Image (cartoon, rainbow, N blue to C red; front, side, top):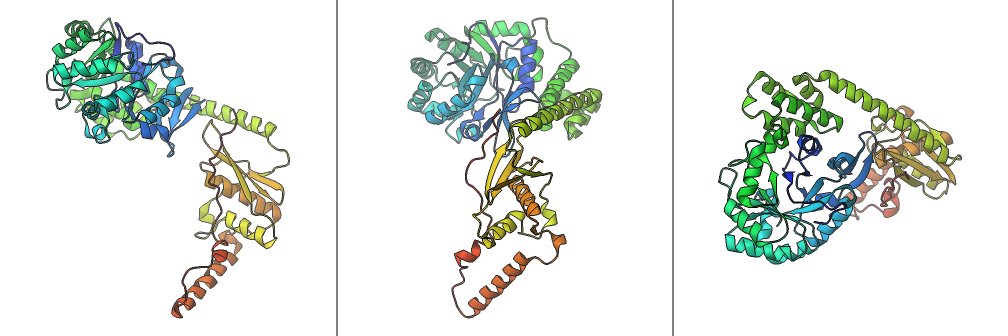
Length: 482
């Protein structure tokens, strides 16, 4: 495992990667209670390669954000030197690309060869890799660390010896076969055989059901497997204070600590709710469990645990911080932007326009009528809140709205509105009365119907199409300099 600050994998207690559980609040809570290293949930290489790395100044986090604006992976400075990023991959090149994307924000990177679930194996990832040692070797050479289940003892030992030669720093072994599930006993003898066969650290995993019921059991499991370290999954999911030397904290306190992190780092309420349900377990039918089950927002979750005041105070702090940062950013924008840009505070509301008619279309039509070059839009995205602003250049003059929009398209429409209003040109709003573009479309439609009746070619001439198709740039939207 290649790391920024080399991690030691001997004598460590580690939070295992768990889907839907290993998000930032759980990882930070595990560290608070005594975990030495924490793994994020498995994240698929293809999904990560679609993400942009964004500094979230409000939350003080680093976010990897998908095109649909969903945060796929969120981390912070508190865990930077102790979090291992686990990836699902069956392709060495993609794995390396993702590693380069996240390497400055995590302590280590790991590939999953242990997950037997269909969502992982159907892509050739997880436990499916075990049937292709050559692929394992090619990925491992590009890779950093591995988690895998067992097969036959001899086959497993031979496989890990082969993997060891690729230069990885550690290997975690889940002591069950890929067809086995948590209710099956963990094979400590196989983990022990692997530990004795290789020189790199072996991390024992899979002991929650048979061994680990309290902190002292972690050492018992480690001795039974002769492993260098122990990785804990379900026992930590049920109560992350399993890592606490002094013993378990009351579950109520644990859950409230978890909720504080969930609110502090804007965790999605469905994920927060799922993790809390795993902690409540047999208490889900209690009054509090029923309130949690009914909750449909982070605020309602907080209220179910008598933490409504904490939610309001924390969100108020973040709103104030966001407003302060936005004001600061706006002041900086005003100082560095072109003073010749004509500005207005406008937004585009499609409800104010006829269907399929937009200010950009009107501006394009006006430029052609006046024999000007077509409008040129330059759009940037602000890192703070990922909002967009566009400047349109028409006849060597620049125009923009002072309001930032949630999409590139909306920002460009707003810029077009500023230009049209400055020029005193109609922008196509319903309140402006008769719409010549709509009338033009009706005439063209009638012409097509006449042509069809006479058996003529139905294709619309390209020069007519151009009048009604907004021209958009295929260029990527750049981010504003920080």
